[in-house]
Amino acid sequence: MSVPPERQWQRAVAMLTGADRVALACHVAPDGDALGSMLALGDALRSRGTEVVASWGGEPFEVPAAYAFLPATDLLVPPWNFPAEPELFVTLDSGSPDRLGTLGDRVRTANCTIVVDHHATNTRYGGVHLVDDEAAATAVLVAELVDRLDVELSQDIAAALYTGLLTDTGSFRYPSATPAVHELAARLLATGIRHDLISRAIYDTAPFGWIELLGQACATARLDVAAVGGLGLVWTVVEAGDLAASGLGLADVEGVIDVLRVAQEAEVAVVVKADPIEGGWKVSTRSKGAVDVGAVCAALGGGGHLFAAGFTSDDDDADTTLARLRAELEAAPHLPT
Ligand code: AMP
Ligand code: MN
Ligand code: MN
Image (tube, rainbow, N blue to C red; front, side):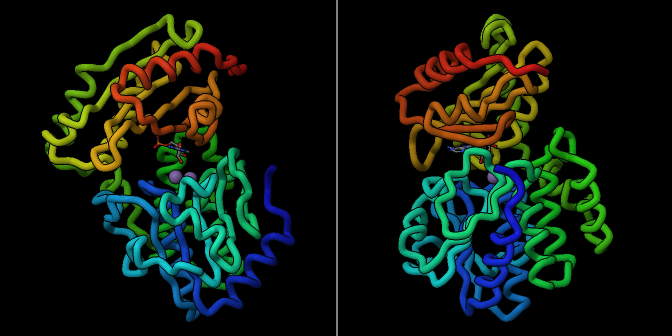
């Protein structure tokens, strides 16, 4: 699976231009690509006169503070007010219906579903698929869709798309930040958006509680150079109590993995986070290129990309979850780097 065939683009454009109402959903606990892609497409469709609602099927239903600058947030409706049987349903950045949380059933009840995504693990659960596992972000596919819909690239749409590009390429540091990605970024910047303010909002702004939480997570981090078949593992656990003490939500813990993965002795970095709302654990994994953590997490019921992936677990304690993950990592083949 690679670039979507021309026929799929044509069908998607015909459906989107023909529909009076479109309902958009992205994955639960949305990140910059999920939110940015969804709101960019929502804004573009609205500018054509389409009635648009957008949502995600999980709590908290609140735009994370880091993404509060995003445009078109007035399109958001809570999942309990989302149409039960959408005329046209579009999912963004979601590899499978379960990633849509409580909105996953709309794949069955909608008249038609368009899937816009870049996960290699995408299960092709819709009627039309704009799926490209080589795209750096779902935002890349939405940018093409906006062009094909003949919608002018406004600053609002550009800011939302840039957010998806920025966050899914790790600020243009991952191999996925190809020349074409930089060219798209240049096009977005040429609209006059304040990319400096976008980066500051996403990466360089947090309450002091985040510094304390990071301190705690780093102080309790562990390194095992013998793990992952000798490639090395660094990990930490963020307990519910740590989160409560910091006054932060789960979405605010996202940045911890980016600090942990700096450890040069470890190929794989892991953060196990207690989920204060659903219970259980959310696990984030990153590798530097020698281990397919997407496959490892898929084997544990989650998914993601080659080098950035996650899963959830209902284990009583984090150690049990870590033991299951470590066993999978031990068995994972080492990729040529
Ligand atoms: P995160 O560590 O939460 O930033 O997630 C890294 C990547 O893994 C993203 O592409 C997510 O979409 C994906 N991912 C995280 N958690 C899950 C999950 N429970 N199931 C499927 N994919 C996931
Ligand atoms: Mn995502
Ligand atoms: Mn993405």
